[in-house]
Length: 575
Image (tube, rainbow, N blue to C red):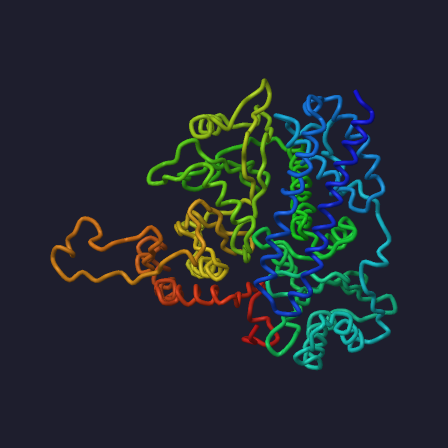
């Protein structure tokens, strides 16, 4: 085994990772200028470009190595030694955990048929093994003896965004009132009280989010201030203290933030203190390091698997025509596998389904589409697979399976958050809960539309309900860009032949959509059906869909609020 080749391999891997980080940071650094200029189209394009970086850099690094390694590419001993050398090279990096994941990604693409292997890959290291660095440069600190008004004023000075405020004095008063109403009615500041605000701004869509916490009454009270840049200037839109709303900002159904994180683990530690009900892998996802989030998820999954005893079973809900879906009841995810053969009337290919998932991965999910981790060669303990599930898998996705004496290996699987299917939720909830759910269902469809996504198959079985009772779409095989669809009024029959025709008597193109027909399949529950039709009349009007298309095509962009509009300081303020 050539020592020189091992050194060169480690250096190529490190150079590939450094290139990725450099490009990632360069694209992230462009975001404030787009926010300042209100260039929302460039903001979206930049976000998509950053999402593609990782895969492209892994591919480029793998290509370089394939030309170097030849027969060593599939050598266990070679890669084991290379891992040790690479580990030494990255030992002092402040983003070491990301470098470990990059190594994992490259070796998986270079070593044929390699599954997760602790000898050759970084499996248990990650976030928990990161060095704890001083927080001096992470956040601004504001001492309590300044007084509330001066603290708020200084925060707005520190985050001026390079754009004049629409009405800074009014923002100050709004923010002071928020703090008084939520915190100072319950706690009295002391000499130990302080306010910390992350220096990095979290950008997404048309919003810029400032995240901080106030130490008061011997506890930390986190807060988030969303800023928007409208035609009249920048303004604070609200101040969020509700932990559920803060958690929602970092939801699996929202796009990743564009935020500068010089020491990722340090930022994750702060965020974990601010939003403690989010898992580490969800926070890495949220700040754009979704590939390392995938690594942290896998580690969390392995830990849970070792501490649980329940079996993997088929997921509840109507069986899909395209996907076979199963779950581990004690763990809050579902495993989705593309079937070998699709049930009629589905006619697409497996590759076309994969392309739809990639499309969602690169798109703004606006809080209405579930994020997904894609895995290959995913190992499960065979003795934990329920016999009924194993039979179903063998009959529907057999080409994606193989077994050893003690493992079931999935050649390709998507993993995403588990939710209660909306159709099942509607069968078991109260009338009031059902009214709220169908309102959310319509909102979900319309908000996706405003992000240029047409759901296609809008049956309730393709939507899920989260713990916060938010309705999320999770079936992507029929989605299309809204701007590619042709919304039409349904022609009115004028003759008996037309009235009694066994098939449509008018021409229908592949992309034609007749919104009036939605009423036939959308809601089956009788006590809320009319409420849904009345609440969402715009769903059934072709002109409304065309207006959304026109706005998208104009390049204006439509902001996806991550919090209820009713809590905005200035409801209805244009952005």
